[in-house]
Every structure is written in C-alpha cells, then in structure tokens.
Image 1 (cartoon, rainbow, N blue to C red):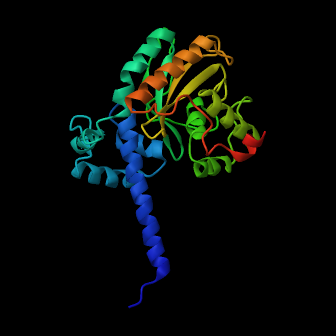
Image 2 (cartoon, one colour):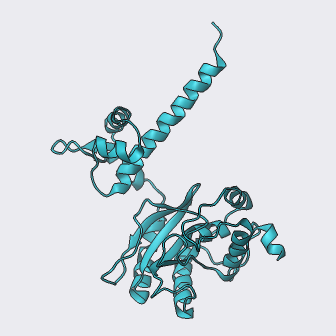
Length: 279
C-alpha cells in the first residue's frame, strides 16, 4: 500500500517534537541545581504532566536521570555524568576556573563564563562577587545576543552567516537602553571586534552593567566569553581602564591555555558586518 507523504511528515514532526521535549526535560533538571518533580517540570515547560512523565520514564530507564524513592523527584543520572567525563580534556569550565577566581578577587565583581548556542550566550558557570549583595545569573541561562555583553562579544567574532541570522530578526527591547536597530547593532559589533571587549549597561536590566571579553582557541575561533557583572554604581557604562585591562588580560590567559596567540592583538574579523564597516 502506498505511503501517504502527509502522514510521514506528521510522524516526522511528532518525532522531532518528542526529542525536543526530552531534551527540555533533561536540561531543566540538569540546570535546576535541585531535584524536580513531574508537576514542577510540567509547569516550567508548559506541557501536560502525562507527556513529561513518559519522557521521564524513558530517561530513567536509559540511565540519564534517577528518581529519588523518598521524594519521587528526579535528578541527573549516571549516564549523563559519564557523558560529561568523556568530554574533551580541555574543558572550558575547568580551564577558566583559575583565571575566573583571580579576576573576581582582583575586581570584586561576579564573574561569568559563557559559550555560544544558536539562541544566545549560554551561561556555563559563575563565581559570586566578594560583595555581600550578589548580582549574577544562573548557569544554564541563555542571554540574548543583542542585549548582553557576552552575546555581543560572541556575535562580534562569529562567522558572517551567524551574524546575518541574528541581525535579520526582530530584536526585543528589554529596557530603554537596549539596542534594537540593526544599523546601530552592526556598528556596535565592529567596535567590539576592534577594542576586544563589550559592555551592556542597563541593556537587559536597569541598574546592572555587564562587560565581556572573547576567549579564543588555537585556530583563533571565539569559543566563549568571560564577563563581569555588577551594579552600574560600581561598574559604570564608561569603565575604568584598569577594569578593561584586567578583563581582557584574564580572557587572554584562558585563550593562551587553549593554544591561541599566534596572531598578536585583536582585529576586526573578516565576518564583521559589511554595512557598519563602510562607516
């Protein structure tokens, strides 16, 4: 009997959605920092408890999650931890740990390490400030490309097709300081690539500033962003030279540990926005 192409498409679409939900469940538990129950997961992911439960059952059976018999809640399982162990030896979090701590102790601000995803700058790890009042973001958060210092740094050194994909979107305005005009953002990316760091004063949240510098590997590819977060009172929009120098210095230390350093200094990448470069 001939196959119905529409039915094939429906099954394929359902399969993709099922995989996406399974990954959403796994990520929600991994980044929560605590055990989660079925109701909590369903509320966070805005899906039914039945669909969440089916995926939880499969993930537990495969060893990616475990269920606490006392609380009936779920946590990361042994197979997920095993996959992490098989990651490359030059793990960005491990390599950056020392320089991050030194940067925090030197400036006192919260320090954040991020990497690029298709949706933004993924927060890998954070180091709390020395201040009794902490300002920071949770690991697992994805920050917008256009409004976060980390996102702008990663975008400034990304290939042109990646830049074009982000720049062609409608950009969300979080505060009155958020850059949402394409031409302004393109000019900002060129400036970031030239000076080697980005700032996002009050662009996501009023009263908060973030500064970030790029981290490169041995191929001079930007693989992450090192950032500091603080109150606009203590980390102003026009930062002190010492603050900029310290941030860039520790980002370069991490880059050197990944083998970067053949090309002296930072320059505008070949993928920098063409319209802004003409200005």
